[in-house]
Length: 179
Image (cartoon, rainbow, N blue to C red; front, side, top):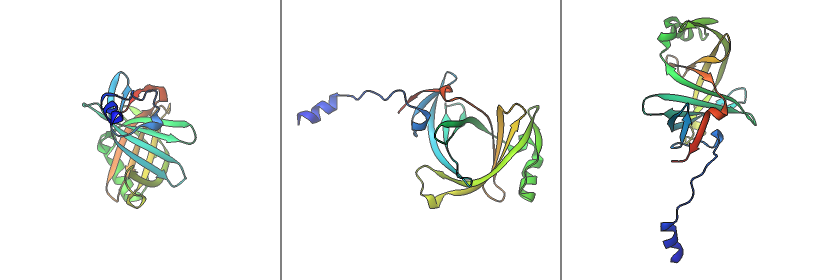
């Protein structure tokens, strides 16, 4: 009985020094002096055997995607935002739908982007079962200095989605706190 009463008045110290690998829905993170809440978590499984986790971050004004690919170490971390495919180049959507191929290059916001790779795989919400995973094909492009990228993901015959972003370092995501 006394233990139950103690629990009512005793709070556990919040977890600190959490890493990106430990992110969960509801956690709060800081990026460039702004706090962002993790709203959702999805998992990518690529045909080549690599895996990645994607977290939707929301600061109340903007939404961004934090993508973490791990092969023993955190070797690939990106932050991106959804962009309209037509804002990149209206012909890209038609070309991918009609030919299953992406262009070799295009300009976006005054900068040239070059085709890097095409990857296929499965995507699922972290709570979903494996059989509920959705097939996708992803076309990746990078700028000349390779510090920015655009990914175009094909979810079905006619459903395409684009995201533009940049690679970041693990330390740029800080103050990770559980909700």
